[in-house]
Length: 313
Image: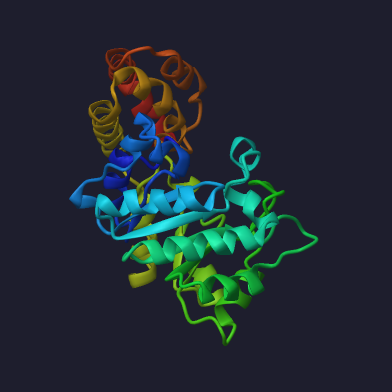
């Protein structure tokens, strides 16, 4: 979720009902070397609380120092990413690569827990591959090192994001009599019905939503409404979609500048207009826009076209 769960979008997700948010994952090496991109990722607003700062790395000492630096900005907790399967992270021995080096993972966890007064949580996967989905024994080991909660993505590292998330082992971890910490499930939570089903099937203490929220902050409102009332709110009207998109775009520009925003914001367009037919020509225009002014001109010029698509949906 790098370049997605930045501060502007986190604030919007909180507005629409996310119970808590997590920063983009921050390189421990980048943080202790005071790299600008890593430093910016530490920024968050009070309206985002409760907020967790997520760090990753391959070196125990660097992770401990990074946790101390993260604590200095006073988040509500620190999260250790032991689940990212992206090649550039794994080849450095970080993220999901630590599923192949459990002693290092545990040493890193213990070092961070001892280095901070904040609750420390872990996000990981079922295992490295299908030959050893060791999450049950790993959950016990991580709990014994002092973590406050565990988030489990229902895939192995080798699966990346392919196939379907397997929640059976998430259920087994949650229902194991030795596990006392909260367990949070992650993977393929795409709508309120799935959210309710996963909670009922597994008994997990919470759900973490990632890709399904990209350009769709309303998913948090919809899930909360369905859990509380068994009713799903009407989908956001066309005008609301446009207003939230513009708000998100403007906040991102203020946060990290126009040039970088225009490139990275392209990941959100499909989400904001998800499900509308005949959208390709419009999306191509947005993907090639070079300034915020161009983006807004394209949206304004296409307003009637977009509204007609929305009504056809």
